Image (tube, rainbow, N blue to C red; front, side, top):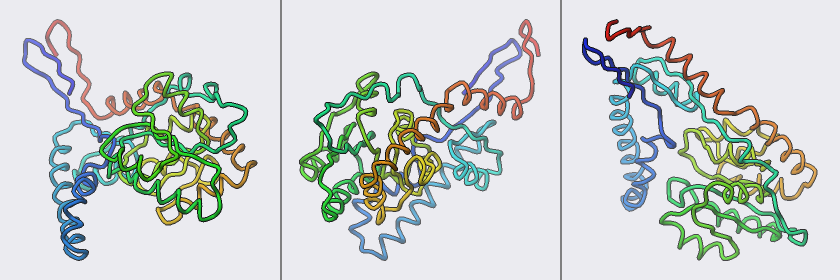
Length: 291
């Protein structure tokens, strides 16, 4: 909320932007434990009702705004249909100096592919797909890889049990995080609920191609076949295997990922935000406390 006070009273403009996840989908994902215990038909019915109710509540909240932003076109369209308000695209930026291939430090004797993940270790991030991907890759007789998982959450003990070769680093920041990204070979992000996917952009800036699902913002960050792949859960390991099995494809994707992310600086993001405010809000001049 932006608030200016003068002798004439309070002049306020409210702006709201969607967070890192679609809230209505996040509610359903976070409730999956008890939804699954209702049985298939009842679970699907309850999930739809819960998502609809959550979306209705969120829509009321967003109708309060004078300026409405969302991080991807699909969510913008949804908010416009539910609120009757114009929604402006507010994507995210990345520090391309910090997140860079220059941080890559790998021992010359280490020839294993590092499949990397950064984020919460929770159900809404669909991290249960990672052990499944490992099993499916091994069924293809691909074993020269390991996971590097950065983050924490309630799924951490479960992942340690199901990915015994994985490196779980906990939460990293700054240069330690930059080094962790740059040391990856493929970034795997199975979430279905992210509205943008900052971590995907950070990985691309680090020269790491990404495999993501078709839902939400991450799919809009990855150029399919150029900077990575967009694949649903059933084809996720196929996409990873395609990169692991083709060194020339992998090398080209690494270069393309960095080039794609380089222009995504924060100055460009905020220029668009300022333009949206200028269009949406009435021009006011507060001089000596008077309009």
